[in-house]
Image (cartoon, rainbow, N blue to C red):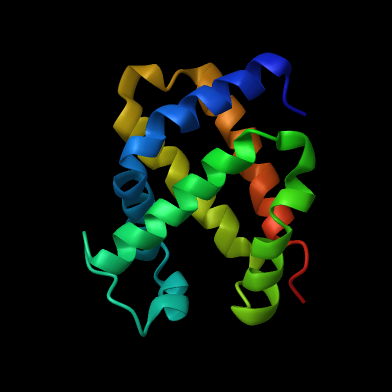
Length: 141
């Protein structure tokens, strides 16, 4: 569970990152696709080269969804329901991939934020991204 202070910290981090959502998201996606080549199967028909229009646009969607969900962490199941259904039933994304993206997002945040990404913010963000991964992967069968 996240404490009140951790929740506030997460909202603060995501709010600060929304102006660079495309850059942060694209970097995290590219890191995942490079580090875990099996994840490329979901993107095989798309241009996933560094700084491609698709990677930037999808990265932006991811970061903005994370930022939006952080504003109401008590209702993740409800707020992420449409994304959960879409990723599970239409795209058939295996739940492990959400965890892999979470790991890559943590590394990207650490690189981008530098010393502002303290151990406390790292731990809070890890809990938050784990909760997001759990919710998004719940309906997969």
